[in-house]
Image (cartoon, rainbow, N blue to C red; front, side):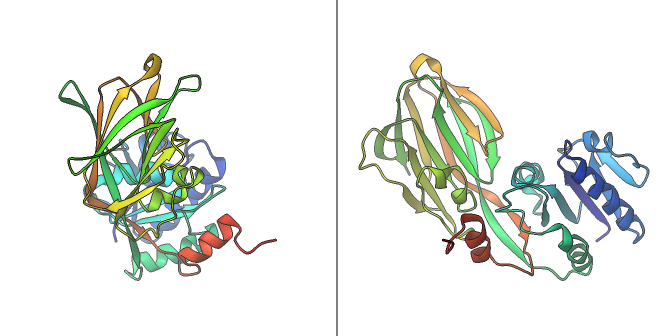
Length: 288
């Protein structure tokens, strides 16, 4: 590996300090570090790293290192996009369902990556588009979830939902969460959605506070084509949120189309813990 892209939580002094140390460590080993322009402006020593726009940072990188929490990783995964570059996610945040590498493991993990000694967990992603009056007005790739929800004071919303062209139901609810297995421990979990092993290929559909109590989460095959038409948007106060980071207002008649993305996110696995240990620790299973 000759070039490593670094994403860091730019407003976190700890992440900035770790990024600076990592850049120097890589330079001493003849490896070029590549950082985002807005990160470069916050680093004290930038002569050892190249910088570019965030959308291009992973263009020819051999590895991406993320310094932050799950949110930083999710943003980085969208920017990596179709490049299939392995991501080493180091947890400097509070939760860390996805960023399972600890700070103490950072340099040993990078050493193994430089030697080609690492294993990856492939995580499926979703493609979400918004059609308005027959025209696609938004198109995004997501790692965690696609969420339709109402504003704080809005009334219940009607969402006509079909799967593979067949009518499923019209959900009357506060919203709807379409999630990947990776996103199943996020917003979907708080809405009583199922926990799905992250290496599964499937899609979950979880209503938020449904009007009909018999509405329950559904798990569908990964190749399902989900179409959600907003039948009624009270006061036009309905929003589409992607990975909890990108959002837009939806109008009555808009159709949200969701399919499996062609590419995956490749997360480098920790040698010291497995997925079930992460679940036990984060969800405090077995504690009294």
